[in-house]
Image 1 (cartoon, rainbow, N blue to C red):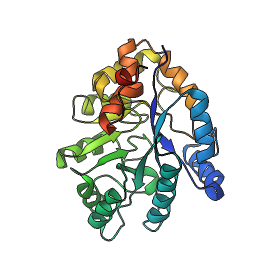
Image 2: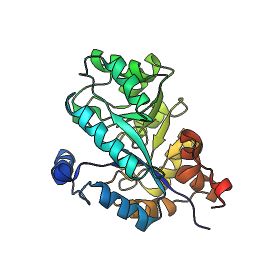
Image 3: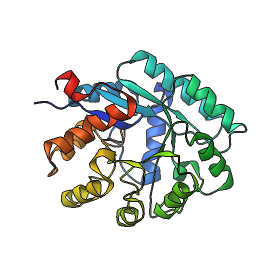
Length: 271
């Protein structure tokens, strides 16, 4: 029986800058990018993999970029209304971040995305604290977390953020701490957060992946491909090869997202 799949971690860029943006991310991580980052390629790859839904977003490296990114993401939503959940870009340098959050939610965005390392701020910096406070209690915040090279979004910083904002609905990407998984598990497992499994399966042993996901709770894990860095279908194959029960796989691949975003459940659809 084929499972429904939702990908919560999909970056897209306008056609004219997609290749440049993808290369920039690859340079940041000293890694080869698999794809160009365009919406067309994302849709094609999702179709090939049998992925029905996705949350799309992009990162603003300056406050001025937010409006342009959000316009593009919402255009993507209008083009594929039944497949895309739009997340807005946000930046701690925005002058009236409280009004910005309200306007984005009224426009139809379902959450916000930040990448402290690429955006160049720590989660406990005063302007970042104000930004997170503007989102807390109002919408989910998808956060790139972890990277042993920096001290912006590591497990200690995330734990402090959660202590400061207990009403924040945080989705901590990369199992709570890219390249810092053991520390993240120790500090964050059992907290009232969600995680995604993007950009983790290529480094972690399958047994360790399962152990970490279960530590967070299988009802709090989302599938994510991190397109365009990875190929969604290949990431899906990696996930399906994990030693999980069928119920655990369906929870991560669809049911958790269905409950979180109010989508049709796999049981109701008969898939």
